[in-house]
Length: 80
Image (tube, rainbow, N blue to C red):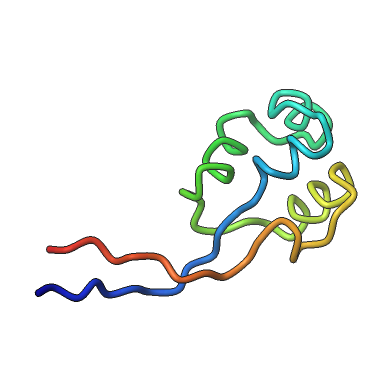
């Protein structure tokens, strides 16, 4: 019997917000002035940090608050 351990991590909800706003990642990249590659890293939860200026620009473009874009959730820890 194995027990799965978890940890808490920041999760990005960029994909859901884009869908709700009817925008593409490319449109958002052009609007915010961030590269498509950097937004993709953020969208796929691989980012380690975000600049406040980028966060504010994303919130302005998506008409949201930081709490709409990011949450902290339990995620499984891969077995070693």
